[in-house]
Image (cartoon, rainbow over all chains, first blue to last red):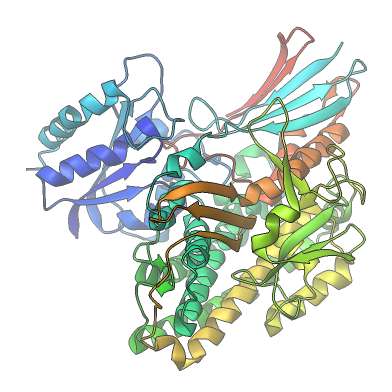
Length: 151
Length: 486
């Protein structure tokens, strides 16, 4: 079984929305042996990619508007397991897809760590994040590497 | 007092789309609209870039159908570079595209549309989800669905470079060929997918068509609109997702127009409304008469139901047999919005049969996978039938091949006016004299889900929920009642 997968979620042409992918890329630069997947998709469109890993580190953006952009949030898997409704019109939620393939008998990661970076602009077409988020990328990558003992 | 009812399906905090229902003074629905947080400036974002980058950038527009954008962009690049793909490349592109359509349509039927039909329109909200579908059809069948999609997706992973955002399309061809071992392996998958399609159609027949309540819903007036339809057909007017001519029929079923994709601006024009960034394409030569049905309104519909309507049938035998059954059951043209689900399954059968046909021809493993472009890029249009309708990419470049102009008509836009009309019609039946029926959310969802609308370019959401919130507002936009489901 492969060890750790970093799944960066977001859209790299939508400003801060791509921060999850940008951080995953930054981690990959420093930890060559880590597998990363970039996905501008969710639910059943990405779930097969996590099969066979022991640990999944999911990095995405979030907009709570309660804290300054560039701040890192950390969540547990169970915090999102509140509903079985669709998360969007085209797909089911990641958690729902996770539960379904687990029931299906697939070897899903036994450890799932979820990180989300507070963002401010997810609608402007730009390959760069806003300045606060852009500046936070290397720091957050370093923090996740240390916290998850990736080196 | 006039009221506004707002149904807001939130994914992230800023939401994915919102339905506004306007009531008149008597408390009845005067109109309803789907509002979308559309992203502005994509065309400008592309300007100045090497045109060949667009096949990779445009897949980022949408995490739902990146393969459709990639393939449409690749076709536009063929035209921009004035290069014809090799025969083998065309077969491979069509094969990859068939695999994509199969897995995308299956996802919709079982995971998204399925809860409405397989579980049932009156089922409790807590059961109207994929787990409810699996509960109804059985765990083993749920596993079968997951396995089949996974095997079909392995085709895209192998030939597309990666399944989520494929990178195989190049002007004049594709980047990777098919070897004999994979041809045989994929042929087995394709054959299995045909059997699986039979099984899906059987489920639809047993659970939906044999249920009088469901059938009444399909043929009933709530979910019916008499509009024009648009879709791509081959030389024999059979459904063709990858290539062909764009055909339009009027609400009586008569051919109204048939044109090459490059001439789309002669036929399609976009209407704008002050309350949304979303545009409403309509038939230029019929004219915009508002959100109206009928032969005098330029509103048209796209996607599976429309494709079957504009065609004279399907190219493959089993899909054709099912098409004939649909004609016998509903009559043609099909104006029944819920029949999108049936049409979608017929298309699944078609693409699976076509995959088998393509793989039975050993020439698909030929090494001639690309013709190199030899001319300076200029201008070109690519058209493809995306799962959600006719998709058009139009690029112009300068003499150095740098993009100077990009115009995209994305598939869901083709249905944008009709979606609002369908929501309004469903709401009119469930809101009378200011009294909002508890079934409003379900029925409104059922009204727009057949179109499988692609609402925004924000392509992911953190794991979470999609609550539906109905806010009833008075003339001053104060909320006087709120219905929430989470």
